Image (cartoon, helix red, strand yellow):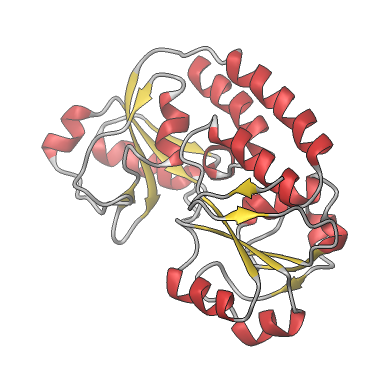
Length: 256
């Protein structure tokens, strides 16, 4: 059987795969599926599960991969993501001869396809199926809260947010929260205009990739006169196995 990735490439199962993961949330899912012994490389941002990833070699960041280090690890497969990794870098890795497994979840339900892909290619179908059953039950049980118009901030200087076609926005939409449309970029920059503020019920400051703090939330709320909450970015942006905890976190947000 062959497994099809996010760009339509077919992959045969390989129980002996030597894997480099350039996607933090995927690294966590692979470890949770029992594949840590086959992970020969990761990024410095792949920090979960801490005890297991500590022994896995780092190959730089998600966008500044050290190609010489990666080459020396001689992976058979490199797992990448369309949003997180740069295509020119991925093309260079492909030229080394590694199989490139491309991921691109855009909504909570896409975690099921992600689990099936990784479980299938790396011969952990039982683990993937067991996790998917838990996730499907949690997703089916998710109950929307009060509809809100929210702005999810991921950066400052410049201020940046997420568009409606991102995984984060679709996670928020699952509890009835909608983000505004601000241009055509997937992660647009914006200014705090009166027109924008008039559209919003709530501002969310993510703990990553910019590390906003409670102090930032308090100061911004005082400045803008709008409610501002600090939220756990891992829970809302990490697909893979952390997304199961993310659904429970979403439910708590909806009830807040």
